[in-house]
Amino acid sequence: MPNPKRQHSRQRQRKRRTHYKVTLPSFAQCPQCRKPILSHRVCPFCGYYKNQPVLDMTPEETAEKN
Image (tube, rainbow, N blue to C red; front, side, top):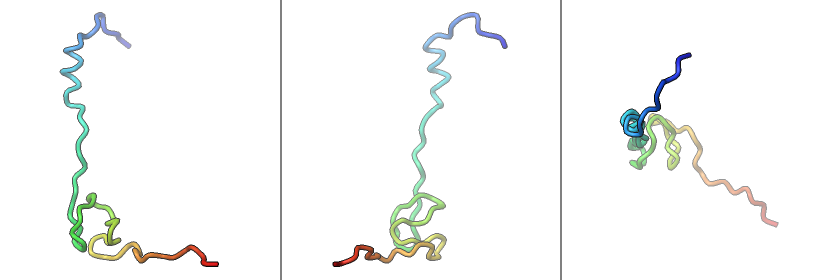
């Protein structure tokens, strides 16, 4: 495999790497509770996805009282 004969300058490296950027995740609005959520995910606040309940969000009491 061929190797470069000379070292690339810092400027040349940085010009090439200018497009390696982190993009922010896009948020959508939940149709049930109107809170911002990640797209194509179940709403962590109400438990709905595509206007259908997926998660049971009722509080459960698991601690036993003695």
